[in-house]
Image 1 (tube, rainbow over the protein chains, first blue to last red):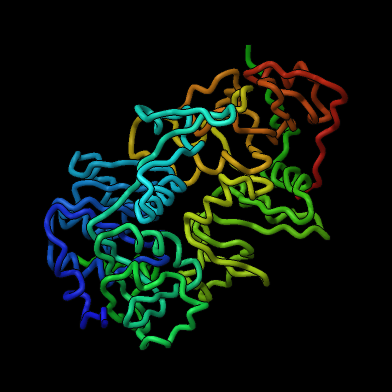
Image 2: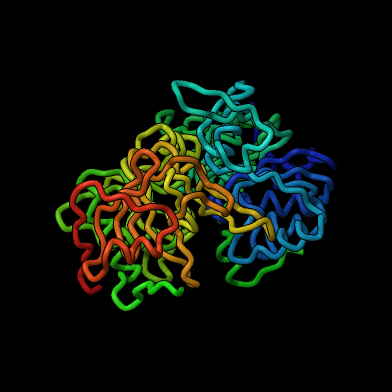
Length: 235
Length: 229
């Protein structure tokens, strides 16, 4: 069992038009820039992208939007230091937005990966983000029913991975990544260092390889903040 | 009639943050909202140990690193680089919001556009124009044992921010327990603003004139004083 791919292009080759794609990261921390850029090279269109944010500058998800690949964003905070790509596309009606509170987004993804079709949360009760949703009372308080979120693919950045897909993360780059690994039919991971089975102490595994389908080593991955500061544009 | 909002004697933002910091107990787990609330961390009383939580999966972060020393995998919810204190921990986003909604945080401190006497908060959006963005605001108002707001008492144009009913889109219903303003400290109890502290240079009537909801006085009202900062 060897889940490794030779390069990012090979790893994302199966993602076609209309796919639902979860992309890990919170801002630049944990964002799989190389996998995203490999997907831009392939240019599938009509994608639904699930991420906490909606891109920054002219790289990563922002470059996907500029390339016309994204028809819908599901996110909590479509703002960044340079939110031009999403803002322009949204205000021009080219990209649909499903705005989800951050904790609800995380829990919907977790539920998707855990086989839980719906759950109740206090978050957003009484607000416009609960409009049209089922409300129920438990122990005297009102809660909003939220549904699981699943995807066809997840693009993930991890730190160390083995050929079975067991993963560790670097600091706060963990964020949505372990949840999205669980919630996609095909999980594609870029790791900064690839090791053989046994190379990660089982006590240290954060994402067990059962949730991972493809692993590609990208040593010295690019960091969004550095690219933004340098004014890099991918397309 | 123009209301005198006593700009001459009101607390600065730093002083509001200082005042709120005095109520965070030793050993507390605390989430500070992005922006103004982050200032509260600067004014922790000496001798108290507080652990800060950030939504993107860190407990126990500290000061920003020196310029050039940033590790962009180590950021806070405002996407600013931070450092770690001994005993810090990382976790995923679902666990992070379990800490929030699950009642594990002692205090959450947020900014506000409006707070209603019912405890409703509006702090994420002022209208229907532009790109809406909510982040973790709607989650953070639920679950912490105490949810504080720190804010100017009135808007830049003198409109009350403490109101009978919010007119801006709500972040949460009945969620705020205490408000620290530039002019007063007010608890929200059973759908009423209860005045606890006010600037010593103002009367309750003057404060009422710049407050949208009725101020109730249940017991002593202390002087709101903060050191020069």
